Image 1 (cartoon, protein in one colour):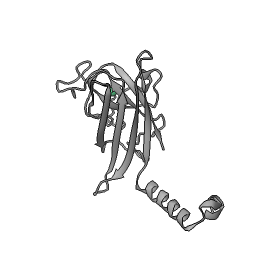
Image 2 (cartoon, rainbow, N blue to C red):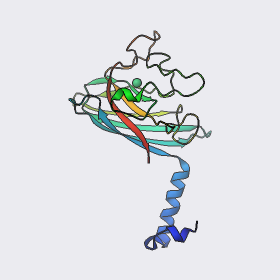
Image 3 (tube, helix red, strand yellow):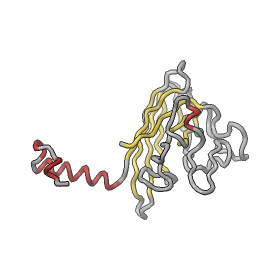
Image 4 (tube, rainbow, N blue to C red):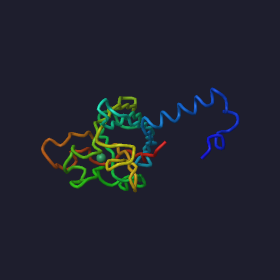
Length: 188
Ligand SMILES: [Cu+2]
């Protein structure tokens, strides 16, 4: 494809070419994604947003940085995981914990916190606001066996309860219990 056939005339300037090159470089550095957080209970108003960005570590390992902010949840800690299916209606449609691979075990309380999609708690303050900044090398945004953008996509689930990380094994509810909010992860 000829470059000049797809670049609008208005950016066929030195600056335009520069911006074009910058965009291409950013794309090569790592994929990005986002999710809009919605409430699992229509009677409760929960809103939020998640931004994801993949970057290579110094050794070339793919790392995904995650920034989540949410409002409307109860004060305290809430479990946050990436679940295996990109669906939120109802929140159960997000299915189990994202855990591809030959030893996959997606049971929320089983093999927890060792799933690929297991993250750390978000802490919500008394105004109902919570912010989480975390990183994981267990998933990718770019194509591959750990990609969140697999055939059926992936979704964040924020649980009603705290993630205890299941120190006593598969105790019911140890991974946070019922689902409070959900967000389908989309590439962008
Ligand atoms: Cu979960």
